[in-house]
Image (tube, rainbow, N blue to C red):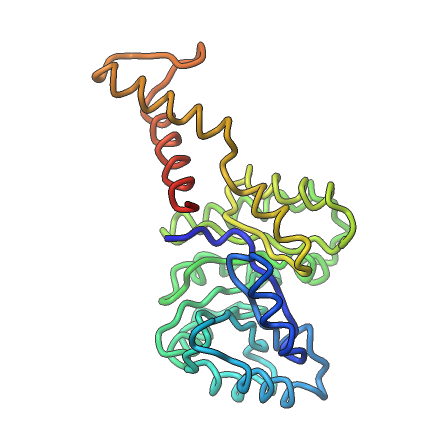
Length: 268
């Protein structure tokens, strides 16, 4: 399975940008019917998206939240073969995930955790049928919580979503956006932190963010070389205790090395 590390948003109200987004190198494109579209333009944006969808180049779609007046009409769009998966914003109830999963004909659903209630229901959402992985909408989450947070204050919430995903045996979660478009250092720092915490990817809001995010989540040459040394040493040891680069190697270290090589192979 190809990695899904970089997910690039494009407004549904600008369908002419979908092709550009698909060519930007992101692992997935999310066409946004929610935050990127003004209330008075929802119906027109949905119609424009329906006309632009192409089964040969499927995209994800972020629909409007279940408690909005646009949700029923969004559901009618989801069976289109040009839609690969559905992002459900303001996710708080597993029942809403089931409705979306059914309307989409069994396609994967990615719940966006953006509120205190959504966070509290993270286990139920992670275990809901059809859920591929969770997404942390940290900006909306801070607003809902009344937080004036730096990244340190958000750390326990991020770790909890990684843990919930692991317990549900789904893919690692996706971290939220970096809003600074011209600060590559901040983007890199945000992406590397997410990777260290166990996230599997990050949302992007501009094509120029994609390459940085993909680089941060990909095993680098040093990691791959280390993993190969570990695997070779483990095979040669025949089950005996061993050390690589002056450090003890046991089963968890071997498993980590295997995971790095598997990820590198998936990118080839």
